[in-house]
Every structure is written in C-alpha cells, then in structure tokens.
Length: 408
Image (cartoon, rainbow, N blue to C red):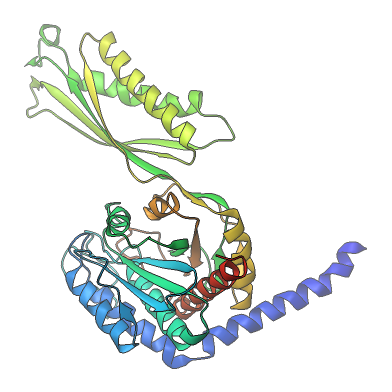
C-alpha cells in the first residue's frame, strides 16, 4: 500500500525534474549556440599537454569579450587564471582542463580535428566551453556575489602535471573550496553523477627492467633468458590484487607493454615491462607498491638474476568532500539535473592534487556519448554544455553564500 501511495509523488517529482531540465536546455538558444561554437573551435584545433598556446589565447579572448579579469599575476606557461567577483569575502574556484590527446580522429564530423594525430578524445574542449559559459553567467550576477570565483583553465591534465603547476603559481591561495567536472559518455544528458568519497583512482605507473645473460637461442642453458623471467613476473603480479587486497577494496594492476629481443635466434640481455596500478585508498596503494617490489625481486632471484623497479607515482585518488557533495545534489536539482550516485572509475585525474590542498568536489556530467574516453570516434552531446555551465555557476554561488554565512 505504501508503495502505491508514493507512486504519484514520484511521478510528480519526475515531471518537475523534466520541466526544469527542459527549461534550462531551451531557455537561451543563443547561449547554447555560443558554447557549441567555442567547443567546436577548440575541437578543430587540439593542442597536446604543455603546448596549449593557441588554446590559451583563444580562452583569453573569449573571457575578455565577457569582461572577465585575467589574473596574470598567477603565471602559467600555458593555461590561465581569471577572476569574477569581489575582493572582500570568501574565494571558491572552478576548474576545467584544456589539453588534447595524441590520437588520430575518426569521427568524420564537420568540426573534426584539423591536426593530424591529435584529438580532443577526452572532452576537454567541452569542459573549457562549459567553464567559459559559467564565467558569462557569473559575470552577469557579479554584483550579487558574496566573494570571488577563481576560474582555472588548467593545462597538461593528461600528463598529470598541470594541477601542480597551478598550485605552484599560487592560484589556490585563499581558495576555500574547488569544483570541477568531467563528461561521462555512459550517462544521459540531464544527469549528473555526484558521489562523496573516492570517485576516481590514484594512477601510478611502473617500469620493470629484467637483467638477463644473452646467448644463442639454441643453447639457453648458457645464459639467463629475461623473457622467461619477465613472463613469470607478469603472471605473479596478477596475484597481488587477488591475495593482498580485500574483497571490499579495489585495485587494478595491468602490464601494458613488453620490450625485449632483436632477433629470432638470440636470447637477449634484458626485458622491460611497463604498466599501471590503479587504487582508491592510500593504504591499499602503499601495500600494493610494497608487494610489487617484493614479487619482482623474488621472481628474478628464483631465476638467478635481478630486476629493478622504477615506480612512477601519479596523481592520488579523487576523494570528494562529503558536505560539498550533499549540497551539490540540491544545486543540481535547481538547475534541472537528475543526480545519481556513480560507480567509482579506475581512471585517474590530477584534480586530486587540488583536493589535497582544499575541500573539493568533482562531478560526472552526462553527455550521452557514443564511445568511451580516449576512443578515436569519441564525441559529446552538446546539449550538455549549457547545463554544465549553469551547474558550475550555481555551485560557485551557493558555495560562496554558505561560506559567507559561516563566517568564511
């Protein structure tokens, strides 16, 4: 009976959500067209991590057109910082990444990449357009803002170096909370994924060098075959997660490259393995690194040789502030978005470096994409652009108001 009584309420709630969604999608066609034009310009002209010079200048031009102040006191080689609002009061930040990937585009869209071997295959062009849209909305109500919004157009996310550059520039000074988002192809437009705690994984890399003793392939007993040793290391590494990580925890170890040998009849001198480790918890991360080194050394020793590990520590896990996540659900509803609690993704994101400095919230914005991130035919549904802009602007304004009311 109680289920039947709730049904009309749920239907009314869904109808109201749909009404809000349609309102925000269709309320300003010119705004949506503007953001689409920005996104398509960036999509045609992708630049790799650390090379985003023309992208930076284009962003500067669009912000200047909106009357937004460029904060050149925070010096970045590529990317830029801008500010909207009052000098008195709290400061919150909004962040978008701006770099592309070394991928040959296969979408055949009329706005496809014009640069061979480069593509916005992760949607950073959409993120940039969304933040520029948020800048317009915030500028329109600048006189009502109870503080300042700092806009971070960050370079080099794909190399996980850009966030640290921004932090070193001092652009996080005075910031009391930070927000960012990432498109999510498997979520529908009109949906936002909001989750407290771990959302994206720590992304570490490794290079293992196995030392062998070369010999003729017909007389392997005269040497030490590094390919055999490397193969056993690959197999042994797979047991680390299954036997060292609890069932309620999560981790991934993937060997993604093996290099060894120069000829069919020669046992080589060495073999090199490359790969990645993904974890959501710092204790699990440390445990896996310790066991990884032990396994590699132990397997090599069993075959009478040695192997060295070069650990490439990447960004930590993206861990969302619980209070920011709770407040964001209400804000999302107010701008016509349906909130869900997404499953954590083993992908990495250097937004996590900001969260080590200040409370932060990273969201998934539904974009109804045909393919996952980094696919050569990746694309986003551009109807999501104005929704993302309204969401970021509303999050910044709500956060400023709450900080001010709390004496921040």
